[in-house]
Image (tube, rainbow, N blue to C red):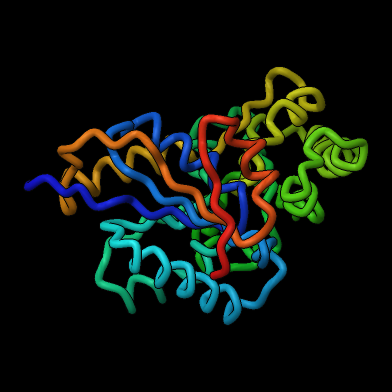
Length: 259
């Protein structure tokens, strides 16, 4: 495979996909990355499939104009509702992110797992096809109403967030889950909060590492790795960059643009 110094494009309905970007950046530090936060339209989870597909195509068009060699859909809702349409329309590899149900089901001792996700993900055809494979495991689904908005507003540690998480997680604890799957790329930022609520024996799973490994695989098999070391990622948002900058830390510059 020849080398390829074009950037990897990553988009999400806001800042949450930076949890995916971070996993990719750690595994593939030489690759240039362009991250697109469509915070103006967050959350995608309450939108119709048609709206989600249109927004995903708009984000893809932007990243392809930036000459990206591969696009990571760092949003569960966009993946489960739009990735088939994206792959049909564009001649570029796409990597999606789905709730990591398989490892939870595989390792669960109680055969009861919980999943915290958006309405758009839980209602999607792709998600329902996935869960149908695991008839022997009880999967407790919970829509995380309000969580994305609070994260986008920089209110991760707010009393309102704590109250919502207790209301969503306590029924799962009573139901005897031993794995909690985070089905939204925003939710890994809530892991410290969630750990305060869950008993120690309940494991938390998100999709970041798996997506990073799949990105590495596609680069190796189809696209090509960068031959020039490029550590400075690029971040774009279409709202006030303050919250995204705070999530990333002061080492990275965030540009606010219209798209």
